[in-house]
Image (cartoon, rainbow, N blue to C red):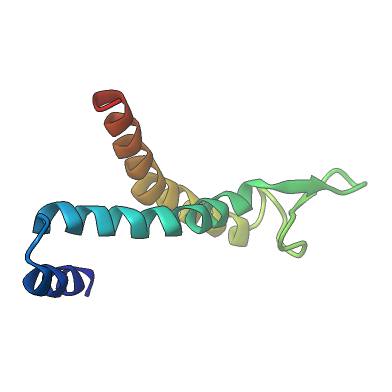
Amino acid sequence: MVVAIVWLNNRYRRNGDFVVECVNTVGMALKVLFMSIVLSSVVPFVCYGHPNGEASVLSSPSVLCFGSSAHDGMVATGLVALALEVAPFLGVVIYGTWKYP
């Protein structure tokens, strides 16, 4: 859908480079979604302690940290989100900043 909007914009405006505008649009969309993805993937790692020595996830007090299958699933999902979305985006941003100061 983003590609179609950029293509229609270029078709009727006749200025600008299609590839540059498309990459810019996709990068902007990723930047907007970046913080929500980071916060969602870090949630399973934020735990608080109980007086009996156990710990629970701060956003879901019924889920015990590092001992329940629900927490294991949350950690796996968070790590996958960090590996597939956050790390590549940060890599591209760091490379672009380093290459083109």
